[in-house]
Image (cartoon, rainbow, N blue to C red; front, top):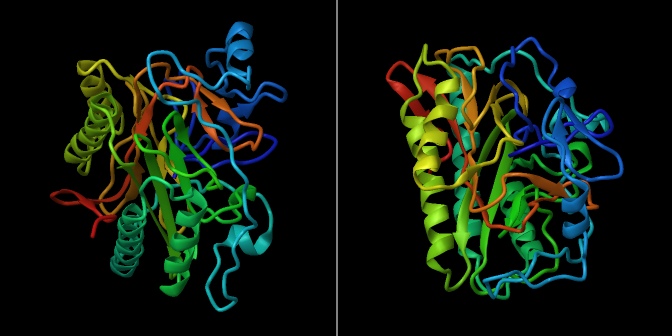
Length: 352
């Protein structure tokens, strides 16, 4: 799951921003991010600023039609109340404390029991995501997907990690069309031709499993299909180069090289992250070319979750303080897996 963290309100950490060239694990991640009050653009310190003209054009809320396409600009629907979780289900610490969650420092490196628990949480997340995908069709509301995901997670004795994380009101993220990440499930029905990312994270026996995938709604055009296919290829290729001792910055180079080949943009605002006992921790996984330091460690777990766009890679945040969309309303796609670094390379934990 992706996050932006501001000094005002923490967000999902999987999503970071800016032209960050060097990040050491000892740095506090919350210092790297900010959300400037009054302009809804998520930004990282020293990142590019958005122009006033862009703000003016994007925020003309009455303009729904997009050029050269029948697709309309995404608009928010009604959001239903958060769904209850039975008291016997173990909650992550950030839910019990009702305090903004901190960012775990240090890598998530596991012993034998921890690895088995990570495999269990990853497997459940994958099964929930697979089931959620079967619900994707024209006319289905994303809130209905949230309801089904929520029920399946609690039926399996787990907690939906997004629920209550930094105030997030739902149990899953559903990001449609130009939504880069953190879409809140609502009353908007999915429409024929839409693409949607469903981002599932479960907390099972004290460990988080985090994954997402793209799904087609009805008849999707070739432009959208190609974007989704290449984004999936970027994730697969990035995972294939992972192994003990490999530098983390090779992930960004691998993804960026393939995206460039197909002339897609790579979103730099949001990142992958360590995951396990903590929802978000070191290392920060940049999906674009970078000079960050650090190497992968045996038995370490983290996510890789590239986001590619057809047009602008810059994001604009809605008034809900979560939903981030491309500033030009161009399509965006994302895939995510939680992986375990093994002697032989990397094991994908979030697959059925």
